[in-house]
Image 1 (cartoon, rainbow, N blue to C red):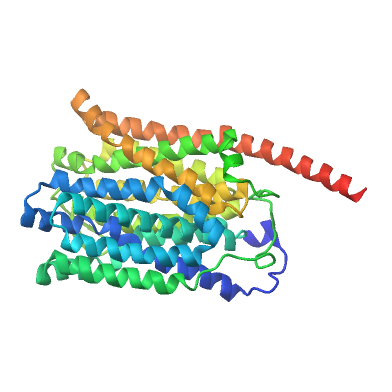
Image 2: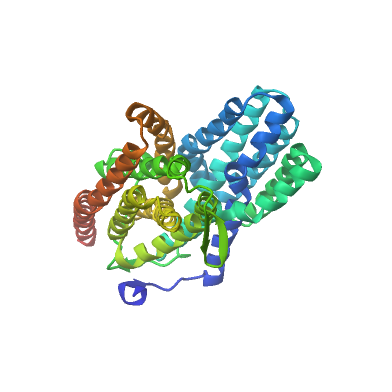
Length: 437
C-alpha cells in the first residue's frame, strides 16, 4: 500500500543503511534510559527497608523524575535542534550516569530527589532528541520510525529487569544503581556520538496520498499559536489521562471481582490473572507503537487515531462488564494496553507533518508536555473513586475521553489540518508564481 501511496525522490548522497543506522542508534539510546522510569519500582522497597523513609516519600522521587523528563523537553528540544543530537545526547549520557550514581549513595530524601531531577533532565534530552532525529530522517516512514524509537523506551527495560533484580538481591540496591547507572550512561555517550541530523538532500522529498506534509518549517512560536496545536494537545491529554486512569484501577478491579490470583493459561503461559495482565503491558505497549505508526503511514494519521482511540474506549468499557471472567480480564487488559501506547508514535509524526522537520524536536517537545499534564490528572481517578464509592465511574470517564478523542480526530483535527494545508499550499503557489515573474 505504501508503494502506491507514497512517491519519493532519490535519497541523494545518503543510503538506506545510513538512515536505518541513525534510527537504530536512537533506539539504543532509548533502551538505555528506559530503566530510569520502568525499572524504578524495583528499588522502592529496598530503599525503604534501609532508611525507613516510607514508600510515599520515596515515590516523590519518581514524580520529580517524570516532571523533569516531561516539562523541560521543549527547551531541551530547542537545544537539540540548534546544536544537533550528537552533543546533546552524548552529554545527557553523563547526566544519566550521574543520576543513578547519586541514587547509589543517597542517604537523604533530598539527595534522592536531586538524583531524580538530574535523571529526568538527561532522559528528557535523550527521549526528545532520539524521537526528533527519527522524525527528521524518515519523512517517508515517519509514523513507523517514531513508533520504533518510542518502543525502545516503552519496552527497553524488559532486557534488564531480571539482571537488576538479581543484583539487588545479591549485592544490594546501591550496587545496582551504581553499576547499571555507569553502564547505561556510558552506552548513551558512545552511541550518541554516532548520531547526526540529516542535511539538505539526505532524505527523500515525499508526496503521499495518505499523509500530507507541510512545505515549510514552523518555528516553535509559530506552531504554538496555531489552533491545530492545541487540538492535538487536548487530544493527547484526553487519551493519555484516560489510559492511565484505567490502568491505575486494574488492581482494584481484579481484587473486587476476586480474580486477581486466579490462574490464567494463554499462549503457553500460566500466571495469576492480575500478574498476567500487568506482564503483557510492556510487550503490547511496545508493539503497538511501531504497528500503529506504520498503519498511519499508509492510511493517514487521523484515520489511525480514530481506530486506535475508539478501540481503546471500547476496550476500557468492555473491561468493566467482562472482568469477572479471568481470561477475558487478561485479554481485554491486553487490548487496552495495545491501543494506548500509540500516542507516542502518532502525535510526534502528526506534529512534524504539520510543522516541518527543522524544529521537529522542539515542536514535538512542546506537545510532549501533554504527558505531564495527563499524569497530573491521574490522581483525580482516586478522588472520583472515593467520591462515588466505586471504580466504575473511572472506567466510564476513561472510555468517554478516548471515544471523544477518536471523534475529534476525524471531525475536528483532520478538517482543521486539511484547511491549514490548503491555505499554506495556496500561499506557496502564489509566492512561486511571483518569483517566476
